[in-house]
Image 1 (tube, rainbow, N blue to C red):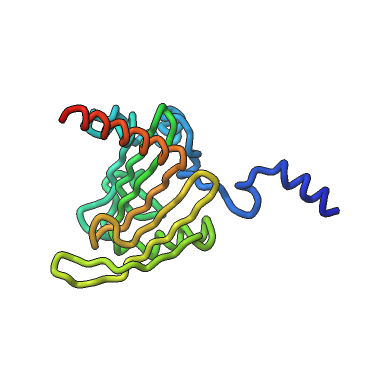
Image 2: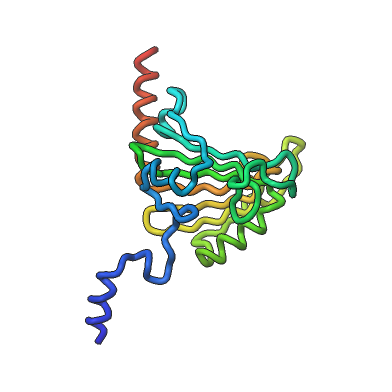
Length: 192
Protein backbone atom coordinates (compact mmCIF):
# COMPACT_ATOMS: atom_id res chain seq x y z
CA UNK A 1 0.00 0.00 0.00
CA UNK A 2 2.77 2.48 0.95
CA UNK A 3 4.62 1.69 -2.27
CA UNK A 4 1.55 2.40 -4.42
CA UNK A 5 0.93 5.74 -2.66
CA UNK A 6 4.59 6.65 -3.13
CA UNK A 7 4.44 5.67 -6.81
CA UNK A 8 1.36 7.85 -7.38
CA UNK A 9 2.89 10.74 -5.41
CA UNK A 10 5.96 10.64 -7.66
CA UNK A 11 3.70 11.32 -10.66
CA UNK A 12 2.06 14.38 -9.06
CA UNK A 13 3.84 17.73 -9.38
CA UNK A 14 5.27 18.95 -6.08
CA UNK A 15 3.14 22.12 -6.22
CA UNK A 16 -0.04 20.03 -5.90
CA UNK A 17 1.10 18.14 -2.82
CA UNK A 18 -0.46 20.32 -0.14
CA UNK A 19 1.14 23.58 -1.24
CA UNK A 20 -0.22 25.72 -4.01
CA UNK A 21 2.41 26.94 -6.45
CA UNK A 22 3.08 30.68 -6.46
CA UNK A 23 1.72 32.66 -9.40
CA UNK A 24 0.70 36.27 -9.95
CA UNK A 25 -3.02 36.75 -10.50
CA UNK A 26 -3.22 33.59 -12.58
CA UNK A 27 0.02 34.08 -14.52
CA UNK A 28 2.75 31.51 -13.90
CA UNK A 29 6.37 32.50 -13.52
CA UNK A 30 8.27 31.73 -16.70
CA UNK A 31 5.30 32.94 -18.79
CA UNK A 32 6.02 35.11 -21.83
CA UNK A 33 5.30 38.82 -21.92
CA UNK A 34 2.55 38.09 -24.45
CA UNK A 35 0.86 35.66 -22.04
CA UNK A 36 1.20 38.17 -19.21
CA UNK A 37 -0.28 41.11 -21.16
CA UNK A 38 -3.12 38.94 -22.47
CA UNK A 39 -4.25 38.57 -18.83
CA UNK A 40 -3.18 42.08 -17.77
CA UNK A 41 -3.72 44.36 -20.80
CA UNK A 42 -3.59 47.67 -18.87
CA UNK A 43 0.11 47.23 -17.92
CA UNK A 44 2.53 49.34 -19.96
CA UNK A 45 5.55 47.42 -21.25
CA UNK A 46 8.90 48.58 -22.65
CA UNK A 47 12.49 47.59 -23.25
CA UNK A 48 14.83 48.08 -20.33
CA UNK A 49 17.21 50.98 -20.64
CA UNK A 50 20.90 50.07 -20.84
CA UNK A 51 21.29 51.16 -17.21
CA UNK A 52 18.82 48.51 -16.03
CA UNK A 53 19.69 45.62 -18.40
CA UNK A 54 21.03 43.54 -15.52
CA UNK A 55 17.58 43.61 -13.89
CA UNK A 56 15.51 42.75 -16.98
CA UNK A 57 15.30 42.79 -20.74
CA UNK A 58 11.76 44.13 -20.73
CA UNK A 59 9.43 45.30 -18.01
CA UNK A 60 5.76 46.06 -17.55
CA UNK A 61 4.33 48.45 -15.00
CA UNK A 62 1.06 49.74 -13.64
CA UNK A 63 0.72 52.63 -11.22
CA UNK A 64 -2.24 52.24 -8.91
CA UNK A 65 -0.86 53.60 -5.65
CA UNK A 66 -2.58 56.93 -4.89
CA UNK A 67 -0.98 59.95 -3.26
CA UNK A 68 -2.44 59.10 0.17
CA UNK A 69 -3.48 55.88 1.91
CA UNK A 70 -7.10 54.76 1.61
CA UNK A 71 -7.75 56.68 -1.60
CA UNK A 72 -8.98 54.85 -4.68
CA UNK A 73 -6.30 53.38 -7.00
CA UNK A 74 -5.00 55.59 -9.79
CA UNK A 75 -5.69 52.73 -12.21
CA UNK A 76 -8.46 50.18 -11.62
CA UNK A 77 -6.10 47.31 -12.37
CA UNK A 78 -3.39 48.72 -10.10
CA UNK A 79 -4.35 46.71 -7.04
CA UNK A 80 -2.88 43.84 -5.05
CA UNK A 81 -4.90 41.97 -2.41
CA UNK A 82 -7.61 44.56 -2.99
CA UNK A 83 -5.47 47.60 -2.13
CA UNK A 84 -3.96 50.20 -4.49
CA UNK A 85 -0.45 49.27 -5.59
CA UNK A 86 2.37 50.11 -7.97
CA UNK A 87 3.40 46.87 -9.67
CA UNK A 88 6.64 46.28 -11.60
CA UNK A 89 7.01 43.13 -13.72
CA UNK A 90 10.37 41.94 -15.13
CA UNK A 91 11.27 39.55 -17.94
CA UNK A 92 14.54 37.84 -18.93
CA UNK A 93 14.57 36.32 -22.42
CA UNK A 94 10.78 36.79 -22.63
CA UNK A 95 10.20 34.84 -19.39
CA UNK A 96 8.52 36.35 -16.33
CA UNK A 97 11.08 36.19 -13.51
CA UNK A 98 10.34 38.94 -10.95
CA UNK A 99 7.45 41.08 -9.72
CA UNK A 100 7.70 43.87 -7.17
CA UNK A 101 4.61 45.38 -5.54
CA UNK A 102 4.61 48.61 -3.54
CA UNK A 103 1.71 49.67 -1.25
CA UNK A 104 1.25 51.99 1.72
CA UNK A 105 2.50 50.36 4.93
CA UNK A 106 -0.93 50.94 6.48
CA UNK A 107 -2.13 48.04 4.26
CA UNK A 108 0.47 45.55 5.55
CA UNK A 109 -2.06 43.61 7.65
CA UNK A 110 -4.34 43.16 4.64
CA UNK A 111 -1.46 41.79 2.56
CA UNK A 112 -0.24 39.44 5.29
CA UNK A 113 -3.73 38.01 5.77
CA UNK A 114 -4.37 37.61 2.03
CA UNK A 115 -1.03 35.90 1.40
CA UNK A 116 -1.51 33.69 4.47
CA UNK A 117 -5.00 32.70 3.28
CA UNK A 118 -3.59 31.81 -0.14
CA UNK A 119 -0.27 30.16 0.75
CA UNK A 120 -0.59 29.21 4.43
CA UNK A 121 1.91 30.05 7.13
CA UNK A 122 5.12 31.67 5.86
CA UNK A 123 8.17 29.41 5.66
CA UNK A 124 10.12 32.14 7.44
CA UNK A 125 9.00 35.02 9.65
CA UNK A 126 11.52 37.54 10.97
CA UNK A 127 11.12 40.75 12.95
CA UNK A 128 14.27 42.82 12.46
CA UNK A 129 14.54 46.34 13.83
CA UNK A 130 14.69 49.28 11.40
CA UNK A 131 15.63 52.85 12.15
CA UNK A 132 14.47 56.14 10.66
CA UNK A 133 16.74 59.14 10.03
CA UNK A 134 15.94 60.60 13.46
CA UNK A 135 17.16 57.39 15.11
CA UNK A 136 13.78 56.03 16.23
CA UNK A 137 13.52 52.24 15.96
CA UNK A 138 10.59 50.23 14.66
CA UNK A 139 9.86 46.52 14.39
CA UNK A 140 9.78 45.39 10.78
CA UNK A 141 8.09 42.14 9.74
CA UNK A 142 9.50 40.02 6.92
CA UNK A 143 7.49 36.97 5.82
CA UNK A 144 8.81 34.58 3.16
CA UNK A 145 7.01 31.79 1.30
CA UNK A 146 8.96 29.40 -0.95
CA UNK A 147 7.21 27.11 -3.45
CA UNK A 148 9.28 25.32 -6.05
CA UNK A 149 11.51 27.84 -7.82
CA UNK A 150 9.58 30.93 -6.68
CA UNK A 151 10.09 32.88 -3.45
CA UNK A 152 7.58 35.43 -2.22
CA UNK A 153 8.77 38.05 0.28
CA UNK A 154 6.52 40.48 2.15
CA UNK A 155 8.11 43.34 4.11
CA UNK A 156 6.14 45.66 6.36
CA UNK A 157 8.69 48.40 5.74
CA UNK A 158 10.16 48.20 2.27
CA UNK A 159 12.18 51.11 0.94
CA UNK A 160 10.89 53.41 3.71
CA UNK A 161 8.60 53.43 6.77
CA UNK A 162 5.57 54.42 4.67
CA UNK A 163 5.84 51.59 2.14
CA UNK A 164 5.27 47.86 2.36
CA UNK A 165 6.66 45.71 -0.42
CA UNK A 166 5.99 42.32 -1.92
CA UNK A 167 8.54 40.70 -4.19
CA UNK A 168 8.22 37.51 -6.19
CA UNK A 169 11.56 36.15 -7.38
CA UNK A 170 12.46 33.01 -9.32
CA UNK A 171 15.61 31.02 -8.54
CA UNK A 172 16.67 31.04 -12.20
CA UNK A 173 16.08 34.82 -12.39
CA UNK A 174 18.31 35.32 -9.34
CA UNK A 175 21.07 33.29 -11.02
CA UNK A 176 20.70 35.30 -14.24
CA UNK A 177 20.94 38.55 -12.25
CA UNK A 178 24.17 37.37 -10.59
CA UNK A 179 25.58 36.46 -13.99
CA UNK A 180 24.65 39.82 -15.53
CA UNK A 181 26.00 41.80 -12.58
CA UNK A 182 29.25 39.84 -12.82
CA UNK A 183 29.51 40.78 -16.49
CA UNK A 184 28.86 44.44 -15.63
CA UNK A 185 31.65 44.29 -13.03
CA UNK A 186 34.10 42.87 -15.58
CA UNK A 187 33.11 45.53 -18.09
CA UNK A 188 33.61 48.29 -15.49
CA UNK A 189 36.99 46.84 -14.45
CA UNK A 190 38.09 46.95 -18.09
CA UNK A 191 37.46 50.69 -18.13
CA UNK A 192 39.99 51.47 -15.40
